[in-house]
Image (cartoon, rainbow, N blue to C red; front, side, top):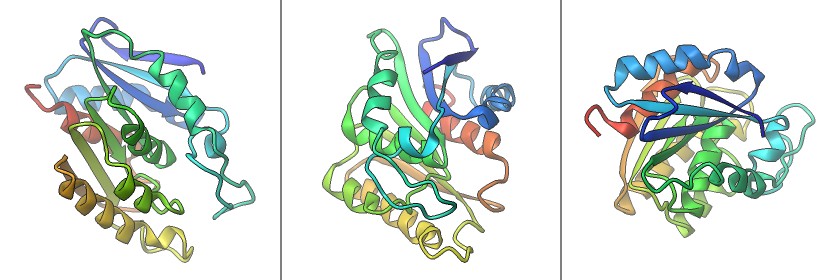
Length: 209
């Protein structure tokens, strides 16, 4: 995957975020918001994902909007991301928005390479995901979850479950002893994505981490 760097490339904290072309247009805005919210120096590495529904999905699932089914390419994507996590002197955080947020949570269940997971409006409605987290505990110390307060108010029955699923995920992580927060933002799924991601990464890093 192609990558783009934002922030300080020599920083000890490395934030890793799968993005599409739309997300990339807002990465500088997100970077500035992280700087405003946290005093921690960081490098944000954006991984450009070409096939969102395939490369970020942990297993196959039928389409819930449009005609594009979900694939099972997350394992391959994680291998590419982990290739950037080989410096023992750096601290790595995986994060993302929507399906990339789901990928971040799933990745944190698969490896202990990350200090935390920053999941902004994650697609935890994804079939079978809540059960997966219950059976495969997260392997990082800090997890940020958020959702827009209108995201569960949708006519799509699968996606409407996102509110209940994120509450279940939050309680599951707390039961696992993970330092976790769940923040509710104003608006639907498409509002303030860059700011929501920034708040997620800033919380995981903390002001004085």
